[in-house]
Image (cartoon, rainbow, N blue to C red):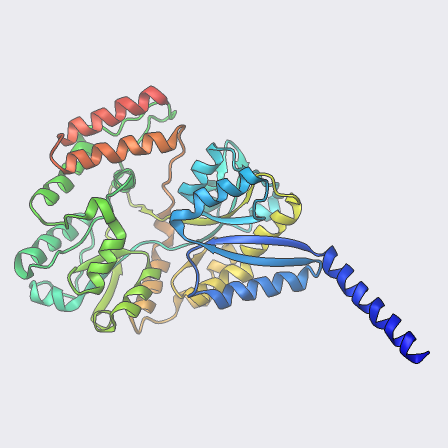
Length: 413
């Protein structure tokens, strides 16, 4: 009799456990290229959310940046999208235009948690399509040994783009190493123009105007550097990735980078890291702004429980979790008002990583995501990229390249 009773009790407990498990809602959230460095922090978030929501089983999936857009579009098309997806601002523009994201319904109180500028980056036609997460204004990491060999003062790094270019030429002439590798591949010249205080569109946004004399002159500056061998040959092909590799190998004097990538230098070559100092990103006085790409969390089209998905996005980007993420990365900054005031961001600068954090914190007031919203972005971006590359290769003049881009853009705008 006892055996029968125990057997029935065990069966009941198993059935109850199975039912409880079956009743749990399974959610996924995707991030961009955070594994394996930040596995512990992502797993902490999973545990914390599940504790607050015991009826949810949360799964974290990390996706390479190069695969994110296509993977998300495929998931939306299949009707099985994740609940929340980490996207960069430029990815969000393209996916909004393709109808792949859901608008969020935030209260005024929820909106006020974030700085207005980052939140506006994820707002399209008055609809909030995502909540901002982390960002980090660019800094200049520089090799003090290369500076000394070039006759430059490591205690007095360049403070403007013009003096940076002059220093880069001196480094190449005196040491044979490249001075810097400008981030001008793809559509990045659009950001260079804006940092210089030059307009991209007319005030009403109806026409592109970036073929003016000052735009042409600025593009010519980089074309001239390229032709004379002052910037690496693969600048237009590999951009920032190649710059980081060159700097870590001790073959680049200055690395224009987000402070988070100084960690990569520390991991790749400690000897170079040990002679690295960090300076503010040298601005062009006319613009007085630093393009600072922003990461955010969005909710894909077709999620089964939009309210729960939005709850997850807000949890991942709340004050507590944004501050903790910054503490773990040591180099990124929150987009929430309260977290950004924490004393953590003002602590000493004993090494290059700490210097990067401290320098970036002083630049936040100049930080702005300069990503632009315009129709047919993928097509127009290709036109821009192809023509700038043609100018760099000497196949077109800078003026002809910009005239051709503006003509093609205005036919679509």
